[in-house]
Length: 233
Image (cartoon, rainbow, N blue to C red; front, side, top):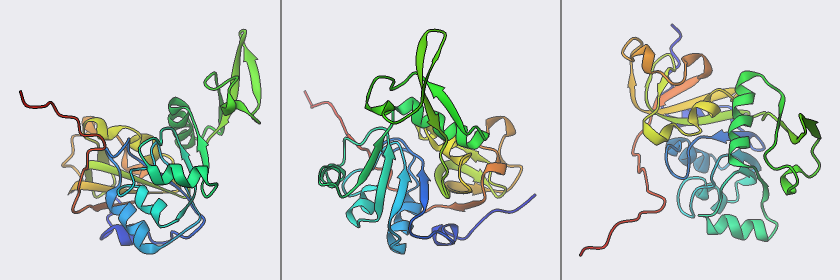
C-alpha cells in the first residue's frame, strides 16, 4: 500500500505556484481546509482562481486570501458573508463566477468522473446561461456546463489513513468528497491520521486512490459562521 503521508501543510502544498486553479472543500466555515488555507497565505502566491462554495468571512477561511489580494477569480455559489469580497467585486478588483449550488456540485463530480460537460436546466433564461450553449430535450431547455480543471484540490476530513482513505464527519462532508475526486493533486488534511486497516471499509467516503497527499492538521478553530442562540428567560 502506497504511503501518502506528508509532514504538514507546507509539504502538502509543494509545487503550488501563482496563477493556479484551486478547489477548496467546505460549506460556509464547516469542513474547510484551515491548515492549507493558512499555508497559502504564508506562501504569498497570487493570481489564484479558487473554486469553493463560499468565500469565507472577512477574517477567516478564504477571506484571509482575499485580504492579501491573492485571489484573482472566485467560482462560487454563495458569498454573502464576506464584506471584503463584496467590496472587491463591486470595485472590479475581483472576477466572480456565480454558479447555482447544484451545478457547482455536479461540475465538481463530473471532473472526478471524467465527464467533460453535461446539460442542466438550472439557470436557463437567466444570466447564468449567457454565452453558453443551450439545447432542448423532451420539450425542456437545458444549459451546457463544463467540468472544472483544477491544479490542486484541498479537502478536510475527520479521519484518514496513510493510504489516503477518508471519512468525513456530519455536515463537514458537504463538498469535500466531490472535490477530493477532482484535483490533479488532492491534498487532504485530517483531524486523526491512522494506519491502513484501522478504518472500517464500509464507512470510507473517499477512497485513497483519489488522494495524493495527506497530513494530520493542527489547531483547528472550527469557527461558527453565524452563531444563533436563544436569549435567557
